[in-house]
Length: 114
View 1 (cartoon, rainbow, N blue to C red):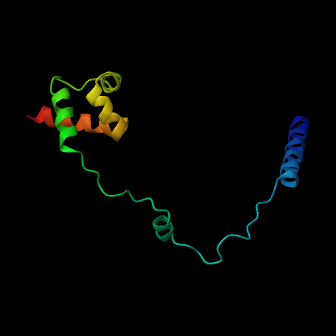
View 2 (view 1 turned 60 degrees about the vertical axis):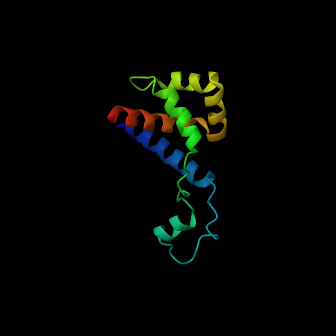
View 3 (view 1 turned 90 degrees about the horizontal axis):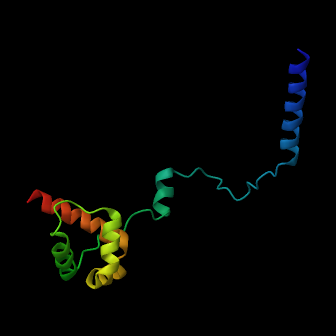
């Protein structure tokens, strides 16, 4: 019983310290009128831009390189291909690896359907 009393005293003291030493945030800059979430989201510009189309020559090069595989290579193998092959490295530099990786997956899905 005495132990529980001590624990309660310590807990109360810790809570007191937290309340008295914490900084209270300045709330004066908050809007006075409520803001709807959908309006706020529109203001945040979270929408993606227009779809970026691939250059036909780049697509042809990628299809030529990846049609040699029966199944999709691993991400590490793809990364290695984009660093060692000059044509693929140029495309990767222009488009970025993530975009090239997504394109490779699309190409492999298209080849699997054929």
